[in-house]
Structures are given as C-alpha cells and as structure tokens.
Amino acid sequence: MNRYAPFTASGWAVLAGGVALFALGRLAGYPAAAGLAVAALVLLIFGAVTVVIPQNLELTRGFAPDRVSAGDAAAGRLTVHNKGRRAVGGLVVVDRLADVPVPVPLPVVQAGGWRTAQYPIPARRRGRLELGPLTVERADALGLFRRRQDMGHRGVLWVHPRVHAVQPMPVGTVPDFEGRAEASKPGTTSFASLREYVQGDDPRRIHWRSTARTGQLVVRESVDTMEPTVSVVLDTRSAVFDADIFEEAAEIAATVVSSTLEGGRPARLVILGEDLAEVTASGATSALDRLAAAQRCAGEETADLVTAVDVAEPGGALVVVTGAGEPAVVTRLADQRRRFAPVVVVLMGDGEPFSHRRQGLVVLSARTGAEAASAWNHLVLDGAVG
Image (cartoon, rainbow, N blue to C red; front, side, top):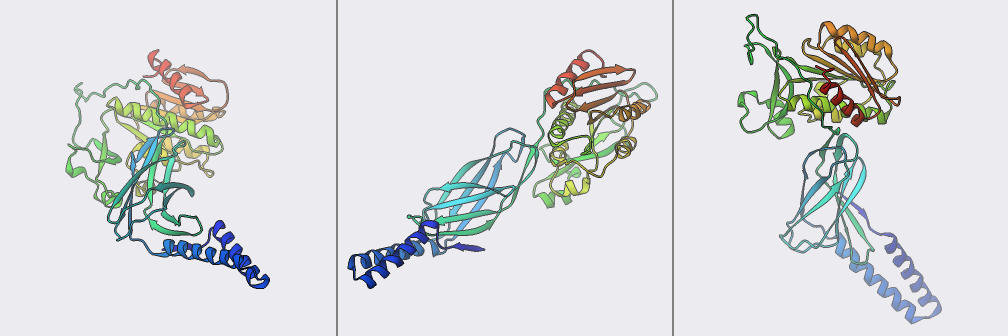
C-alpha cells in the first residue's frame, strides 16, 4: 500500500512562498517576483515527478543472529533489489521495533541492481521483539516531497535473559532395581520442549506442525525420566516482583536451565501462568525462548505457585525462583523434599543477600541475577547444593 505525504515542511514553505511571490508580481507589477514564483513552481513540479513515479523494489530482511541475550549486539540485514528500469535514489527504509522507527538510509540503487545494509537493533531488554512492517520513504533531492510505501515483512527477534557462568548442580544417577545405571529404558522418555533441528538429529523427531509454522525444521526434545532432572519453576506474580526484579529473576532461571543442559543433564522449565501452546505457536523452540516471552501475571496467587510445583514430575532437583518476603512460601516448598533432592529456593528482592541451608533445603536471597549466580557457585562448591 502506498501512502502519500506530498509536501514536506520545506515543500509547503516553497509552495506558500511561490503563491505570495506570484500575487505580489501580478498585483504590484513586479516581474522579478513573478519570475521567482515560476521558478518555485518548476522546483515543485520537478520534485513531484521525481517522487511520484512508482518504483519496482523488492525488500528482504534478516537478522544476524535471530536470538541474542539482553545487552548483546543484534543487527538487521536489509537487501533491496531495484527491479525497475531507472536508478532510484533518496531512499530511506524504516524498520520498526515495538513501534519505534529505525531508519536505514540507502545510497542510489541502479536499475536491476542490489544494495545491502546492516543496521543495529537495540536489544537491551529481554523479550520477544516484533519488528516491521518495513516502510520505504523516498524524498526528492531538495526535500520538498516525500512518499511512503508499506512493504510488509514483519519479523521476530528473540532476546533471551542474560546467562551467568555457574557450576552445574551435581545430580546423581538413579540406578535400576539391580543397581545398574542405564542411559535409558523403553518408555522412560517424555516430551520436554521443542528446539531447532541440528545436523545428526533423528528425522523421526521432527515436529511438522511447528516446522510449517516457523519455516524452519523443529524437533521434539525429550528427557529421560529415569535420569535425575533439574526442575526449574519461575514465579511470575506481579505481587512479588516489580518489573526490574522480574528481569533479574528470569536471568537466574535461565542460568540454572542453561548450566544444567550444558552439563549434559535434562532440565524441565515451569513458568507460572504460561500458556505453553500459545508460546510455542509464537515460534518459541527452547526454554530460553520461553523465558524471553515470560511476563508477570496479576491474577496468580501463592496457591498457584505451590500447585505448579506439586504437579511437576518428581525426582531429581527442584529450583524455585520467587520473590523475597514470603516465608510462608519457603515453608510450603520445604515439604517438597520428599519428592525432590535437593530443593533450592531463590528469593529475588531488594533486601540484603543471605543464604541458609538445612537438610535437603537451600534458601538464598539476592538482589540481581549476577549476585544470585555468585551465591549459587559458593553453595555448589561448598557442597550445600547437590
């Protein structure tokens, strides 16, 4: 769809000045003023012809990469193909990031030619960022006219929570009834998440519905229920987190999940109030994608958090990330020691950091994700966790 904004502020000024000069020349008998009015008319006609002639442009946009951590550099890659017979200049392609315009000026694109430009995309904060649609703006050489053309091309950039370097939680292997530690048994694997296909994956694990929706191969990720799993539960209640503290909570949840998976252990992520089907439909293919899309919930209660833990598959370790100042939650989570070993409760808030432990239960409090990660490392290295 084309949108016209025929006159810029400069164009209106030239038009108004030309009309005034023409009137002065005719009424007061000043030929020079009339001549200047004609010159202004010529400029307006030249500018209008330059901009109004339709252009046959093809735009594509990609990301490098399409998944980053908060604070990392992200870049868009824009490619313009001029399929017309005339060179096109004065182009500005405008991308939009959460309705904030990101202008990308382009040099002249020759007839049949290509132009490629990279531009930074601010990725300072975690989230699923929607980009687009792309808009082509073209102005004449004097800036008197401007034409806008919507080109579509929406996209998504996943900004994951920051992940800190931590020691993975040491989790033992569950032996079978004869004392043997087996890698897997028939019927002991269960679905955990979806992720992008990598070379060597079993084609039978391809999830065709998600592949068709996202345009890239997606496979089912399973966990072995006979192998101890680290279950990570992220509280999302707005009653216990403000916006900034919630970002820190998402960081430590992402850190624990990532360190567990990198250590070769299965991890199960539970996000309070999450609609997993909806998040998957939006293109999420990993736990970090789900954490990028996580939002605070206003309608959830303490009982909902406890229920989310209660329905989690028992066995292995449990890590619950919640807000500070709720001792009743810690007391109720302590009962989970009969189902998980160990139970770790991470309290995120503005208070002074602390940690304490008792049989099968570790509680640590921190103000930031980095502070929680540091406390986690101390507890793991001291043998309190595991």
